[in-house]
Amino acid sequence: AANGIAFNLDGTKLFVLGQSGDNIDEYTLSTGFVLSTASPNGTIFDVNSQEGQPYGLTFNNDGTKMYVCGWAGDDVNEYTLTTAFDVSTASYSQNFSTEGTGRSNPSAVQFNLDGTFMYTIQGDTNPRIHEYALTTAFDISTASFTEKVFDLTGEETRARGFCFGD
Image 1 (cartoon, rainbow, N blue to C red):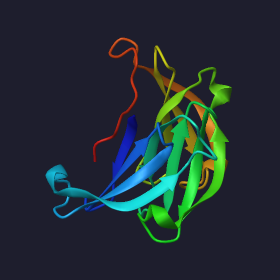
Image 2: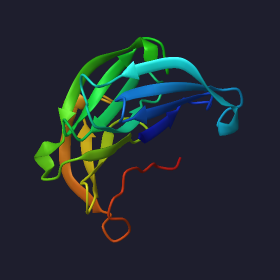
Image 3: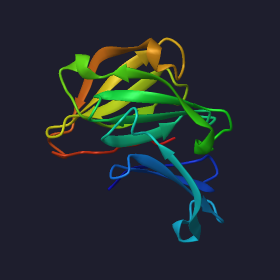
Image 4: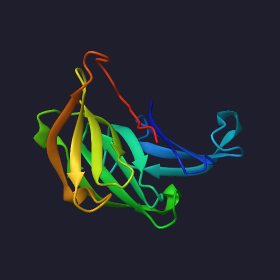
């Protein structure tokens, strides 16, 4: 049950978040962003200790932080990577609960370019994107709900992912 994907900056690494194993599998792409050139590189990172129903995956801009959100904890989990975009070097750092918004089941997490805003899709049905302001870029311990919500119900009743353009 692959629930989320992410790439490194040049597209030579693909990360797939799976729910059946509660882990992140890392793939190497010989040509950036060309999926037909992907092959598993054997690196697997288990997130089960923090999240038993993972849905969303993203990284900060330089790949030194990774974020996983999910339904079991109704939260976003932050991991520190000592080597950028190498999940074998990841260690759990902290989490941020999304329960205070009146919605549960975060299915995706994204940040704006400078990391001062975090966004999550929440809700198994009738999903909404919630906005959080961060006083320190990419540090989820500084996040607070802005009360800004974008309702997706008219477009999709079970949205599980989203992304922003450049």
